[in-house]
Length: 73
Image 1 (cartoon, rainbow, N blue to C red):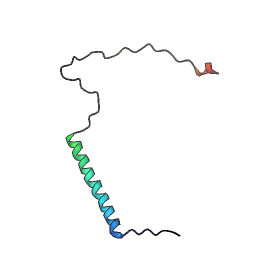
Image 2 (cartoon, one colour):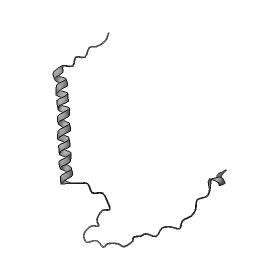
Image 3 (cartoon, one colour):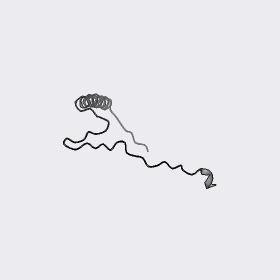
Image 4 (cartoon, rainbow, N blue to C red):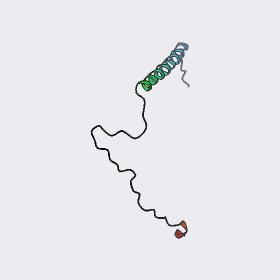
Protein backbone atom coordinates (compact mmCIF):
# COMPACT_ATOMS: atom_id res chain seq x y z
CA UNK A 1 0.00 0.00 0.00
CA UNK A 2 1.33 3.47 -0.86
CA UNK A 3 1.70 6.42 1.45
CA UNK A 4 0.01 9.73 0.82
CA UNK A 5 2.10 12.81 1.52
CA UNK A 6 0.04 15.95 2.02
CA UNK A 7 1.79 19.28 1.47
CA UNK A 8 -0.38 22.29 2.09
CA UNK A 9 -0.45 25.30 -0.18
CA UNK A 10 0.59 27.72 2.61
CA UNK A 11 3.69 25.57 3.22
CA UNK A 12 4.64 25.85 -0.45
CA UNK A 13 4.16 29.63 -0.40
CA UNK A 14 6.17 29.90 2.82
CA UNK A 15 9.06 27.90 1.34
CA UNK A 16 9.12 30.03 -1.81
CA UNK A 17 9.00 33.23 0.26
CA UNK A 18 11.75 31.98 2.58
CA UNK A 19 13.96 31.01 -0.38
CA UNK A 20 13.47 34.38 -2.09
CA UNK A 21 14.17 36.24 1.15
CA UNK A 22 17.39 34.31 1.78
CA UNK A 23 18.47 34.92 -1.82
CA UNK A 24 17.92 38.67 -1.75
CA UNK A 25 19.29 39.25 1.75
CA UNK A 26 22.33 37.10 0.97
CA UNK A 27 22.97 38.97 -2.24
CA UNK A 28 22.76 42.33 -0.46
CA UNK A 29 25.10 41.10 2.29
CA UNK A 30 27.59 39.82 -0.28
CA UNK A 31 27.60 43.12 -2.15
CA UNK A 32 28.07 45.02 1.10
CA UNK A 33 31.02 42.78 2.05
CA UNK A 34 32.56 43.32 -1.37
CA UNK A 35 32.31 47.12 -1.02
CA UNK A 36 33.81 47.20 2.46
CA UNK A 37 36.48 44.51 2.02
CA UNK A 38 37.32 43.76 -1.62
CA UNK A 39 39.48 40.78 -2.49
CA UNK A 40 42.89 41.75 -3.82
CA UNK A 41 44.73 39.34 -6.08
CA UNK A 42 48.45 39.65 -6.57
CA UNK A 43 51.78 39.47 -4.83
CA UNK A 44 51.49 40.32 -1.14
CA UNK A 45 53.31 43.40 0.06
CA UNK A 46 56.38 43.02 2.22
CA UNK A 47 55.84 43.68 5.92
CA UNK A 48 56.81 47.14 7.14
CA UNK A 49 60.34 47.35 8.45
CA UNK A 50 61.69 44.41 6.48
CA UNK A 51 64.49 44.74 3.98
CA UNK A 52 63.37 44.36 0.40
CA UNK A 53 65.27 41.65 -1.43
CA UNK A 54 66.37 42.17 -5.01
CA UNK A 55 66.54 38.49 -5.94
CA UNK A 56 64.48 38.97 -9.09
CA UNK A 57 65.03 37.56 -11.64
CA UNK A 58 66.16 34.25 -10.19
CA UNK A 59 68.60 32.53 -12.52
CA UNK A 60 66.97 29.50 -14.08
CA UNK A 61 68.71 26.14 -14.34
CA UNK A 62 70.21 25.28 -17.73
CA UNK A 63 67.69 23.88 -20.17
CA UNK A 64 68.14 20.21 -20.97
CA UNK A 65 66.17 18.71 -23.80
CA UNK A 66 64.09 15.71 -22.81
CA UNK A 67 64.75 12.51 -24.73
CA UNK A 68 62.48 11.68 -27.63
CA UNK A 69 59.68 9.18 -27.31
CA UNK A 70 61.35 7.18 -30.06
CA UNK A 71 63.98 5.99 -27.60
CA UNK A 72 61.26 4.20 -25.63
CA UNK A 73 60.25 2.01 -28.59
